Image (cartoon, rainbow, N blue to C red):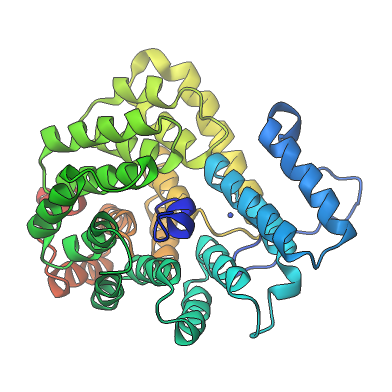
Length: 390
């Protein structure tokens, strides 16, 4: 999912605590250390720790709580570590359950719920916020994004259309690009967003967002030249964006350019999703066998630790790991199905279809292909691969 900073910032224009499902793992011995967070080696995390300590002295300080929650969300995004979502939720604890909360807290609560894959809870909060403030552009953009993630493309497009006149043209076009491109309008979505980008609208974050969307649409349409050009332009604006690097790595893997993935991700081993993509690249490179073996073991341990904590945020990534690296068709399919029940982005559809095909599960293959047909997806070359040339 696109990084959360876009959801909080772009519409104004001046994308992990426990999942919503599953209970946390509680060790029997208080002396047991499950894992240490990496504050010592990261100034931003050290600052977040200090901010959390200050908040404990006055937990109802809304401004400070929002700052802690935003910084924790950023850490979760950067590191791919859902435990920081727990810190964000703890900061918002006084405003987590009540219905009558300040708009900034309600918006951030909805954004956090989306990161925890509580999409229903996120949409409910955003519905309440927009009922009170229909012109709140940030809330409308966030709701459009969440609706797109769960596959409600028509509803998402209505929210994007409602941004017209309240946000820059490039924001409206970018908001609409994903749901439009996944519901029978990929070429029009691509051309509309490209024109908006050429008009030089938006700041660097917005332009990077637009370029990433263009790259993803071009990749799904099998226009590898355009996709590579857009990915590179986006990386020039922000070479540290974890979502962007993951999307580009997936493109490179699809283009059989595993060798190019290693320099892209070599410094991102702390991020589970990026480490997975690095391992997928190393798996194809005989001279990286030692590194691949180490990363395979590390990923297995991380996914095991997540299960013991009750986290289910990385089910899509674990399904890819099980299928491509451990060759566990049935285990991958179970994870992919569970993931599909709550999240329906292109990558979720792809792993569902690939796992079902690999496991020989015709019923689940039909679920995926029916979804493609019902939504008139004409740009699904990467997803279907001609159903693996049956």
